[in-house]
Image (cartoon, rainbow, N blue to C red; front, side, top):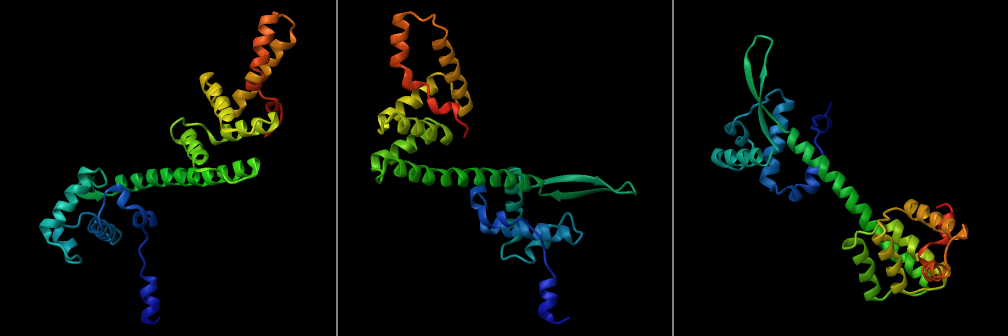
Length: 232
């Protein structure tokens, strides 16, 4: 085996997300290098390397290394545990479980955020397709407000757009009124909107409404959506 093959064979496994998102965990490059060497020592059988052993491979002093270790412990990324050997000898060891858990949580949030960011451009494209023109800056901001401030689900926003298309009322005020009505009634999913719509039509069909009620319901008919009977 040549030297290059030996070099490539001598590998260490660690989460790629540590390199990609360490800054979001308030870690510095020095912190990451200390973590990598801690992990390396552990894979080699030394579960509790001293600051001196660590700094032999770093460009910082033992005091600085100790400060990094304290920082990691304070953040909950590193902890010291005790382990009893078969000979009843108590040994101390470092564990990076807190860091790995934080990274897993960060990965989940990142994936969710990425999905959300991908959803919004798709939303803009959908609106532009239905309106047959580019959206104005105000309309783009309106969609962002629905998502970020009103916390409307993208599926509900698309559903409200679909209703506006079916009703021939292609304007943002109408779509906003639909979404506000849904929110006022506590509707959070398309399925909930579908159920309320069916309940409304059932009441209309029982013939018990007064003329006043019928007039009121007629004025509200655009709030309860024909498309809700259709499958997604």
